[in-house]
Amino acid sequence: MTAGTFAITQEGTKLTVQGRIDSTNAVELGDKLEQALKRGQTTIILNMLRVEYLCSTGIRVILKAYKEAKAAGGKVNIEKPSECVKNVLGLVALNEMLIE
Image 1 (cartoon, rainbow, N blue to C red):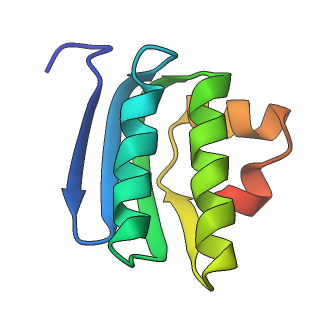
Image 2 (image 1 turned 120 degrees about the vertical axis):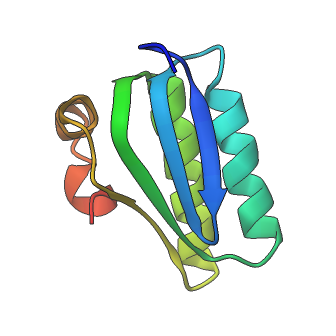
């Protein structure tokens, strides 16, 4: 996989995301999160160690899934965030809420 290539893989309740999450592919991430929630998976873990860029649309889809999971008694958390993810979420004061 080349640098910046966006990919999502799923293993159980864990989604591994890598590459750039931008306005052209954040919808795909949102769809994967929504599908998991519709299947009754109210606890979702995002491995974002290899995410190189996170745009506001990406933050929005993660936050939407977080709110839906929380309303169902679950959670969406980010484990192993990249430095980029930590920095971006820190700027919008969501790191403590989302990073496990």
